[in-house]
Image (tube, rainbow, N blue to C red; front, side, top):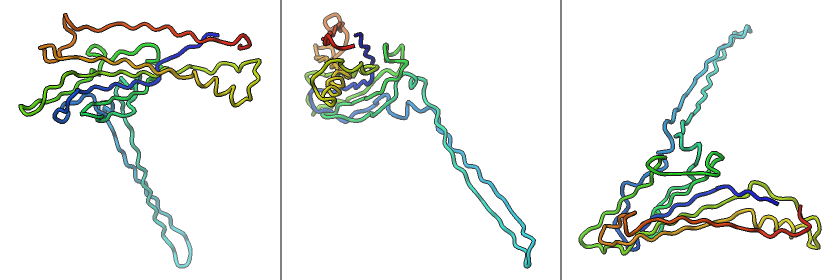
Length: 208
């Protein structure tokens, strides 16, 4: 049985090891993902005259209010779930990936938005030893496979056994130290790495 996992959620956390001044120039924030918001109001009037003794006049007024939102083109790939300040002056971006970004997603200067934030260090504050960047990715299985054909467990346990492998969460954390270069990254002494993971799920002989 072949199972296909696709990207479902992404959480990016960036923060210093020591307490710094409040965050500044954080990008992107939630308004970035909305290009334009339009609110329109339509009013309708109607009048009626009834031939009676005495004659009666009826006047009715109705108002219809609507709102349309134009989203940034990046929302075709991701939608922000939450953008918030985390612990120890860190910043957290949490996204939901759409079908266009299930198998490949890049957020960089070539494929905006590029994530940025700024800390101001005063003469009275302690220089952080490092900055940590943590990326947590949740992979979701596209479909639940068929139930095990032969099993002595009750149906509820067979269902839970299937659900347990529906989601996989992987976390990659990088620590960028101050090597006399004000936390510059990458440099000739500090560079990234590639991570390849192969997962094998054992399947019972009676499964289909």
